[in-house]
Length: 267
Image 1 (tube, rainbow, N blue to C red):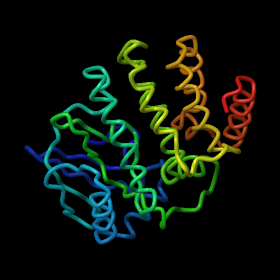
Image 2 (cartoon, helix red, strand yellow; image 1 turned 180 degrees about the horizontal axis):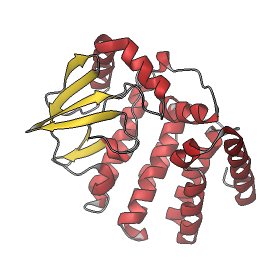
Image 3 (tube, one colour; image 1 turned 60 degrees about the vertical axis):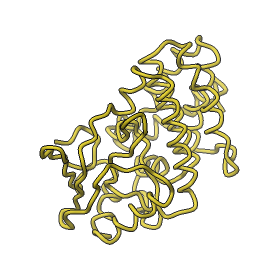
Image 4 (spheres, rainbow, N blue to C red; image 1 turned 30 degrees about the horizontal axis):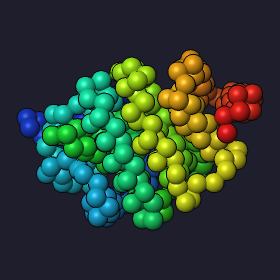
């Protein structure tokens, strides 16, 4: 079955797993609805685009249903990338670097990937994207109805923001699983991921949120006195917490984060 925050329901069947799109998912419902409308043909185009960009997908991936939209593939028994940070720092760092390469390769295409570390597994020391539902297709990006939609849409579709978020996810996972010395092995990769010809000065929300998170992450690797700031700022800018707020509370949170960014000179 699905875990909180997932867009699909999982059903394990022996050596395979079937994943069905949840069009009623409260996070990014517009994205899921757009995927449902595009159907199997849209999903096939999306998967082909990922493969052409070099993204490693689970063995035997196939579309098995259009309504509901569902895929089937071999079960990947390796650890999720979030868990792998505790087992082998070097493999984790190499995997995150590879995901960054995929993001850049996809930037000029009509496909994106969700960089939540739980969406990736290590299979024979090779990182694999195990979730393709819902397909993230920029040309079908829904119009935001509120500030959460704006935040979530930017996270999903704007590659520089997605790269900023990936750096933050990776550093947080390493700090939970390793020592600061071990986490610092990620620093060269983190700096490389944040170098982009399309990277511009952050302005406004939500770009400033994820740019500031990446900035705090880098500063923490350089100076462990920033560790408490990282945990506090990541809690303040939690996407899941932001989702649960009503719109007036979200506006207050945006203002609060803006003040924190200015006070701590995070951009």
